Image (cartoon, rainbow, N blue to C red):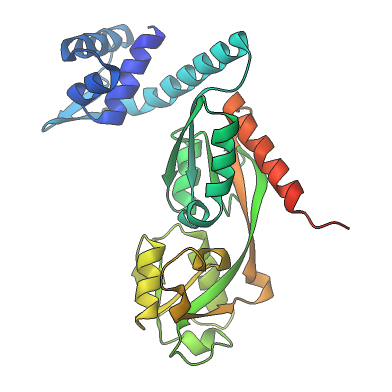
Length: 293
């Protein structure tokens, strides 16, 4: 087994097939096929199952993927350590959509300026899906709100948020959960930390949302709320980035549920130079925003 074979394997996984992987690697298809067959022979197991025209990972392939990614990451770190200089390679990070929309652009812009040799692959998802991606090593790190019980992870605070309930301007004034008990709750799918905060707000008044409309875009959520379809919860910072926010009224959640801190999480003992540089940038950013005593 060599690192080139692992790179071929990872490319086929990412691209979903031999021909797409060959284009990405600038190789002929027969070369990619041969490398995968040699890798499978050396491991003594089938890594892929053909599903129509697409290759999908076999159970053994899914298990092997995590190890392959670790080995490739270690290889990149070793090259960087020997060569010295600035971090390089690929940094795969996950993030909540709200964080990607309102908080990350300035941070990533500065990071890209300071570390141009690092290629960032950014994916979005719910809080729980992002945690699973880090635990399964599909992402090296992720920006999440809740990481309780994830003993395999380390974390650092990144951004402070205040959650608000949004409703159409025609909605009656919202003072408590009882004022929205008949409304449809518009939220991200199960696994969203902000949705859980809203549910806890309802539960504190011995209520449960009667109807939930699941959407996966803040733009769609804001549009539905503005049209009077229902109510939703989101960070205050997101409203300024979403078209249609001026057609809404925002009510802060109670103090006990309002404030949340987005954290960067990663697996214990697994941090690359590129991730270390990101953590340093986050630390510097928080120090710069900390009010003087």
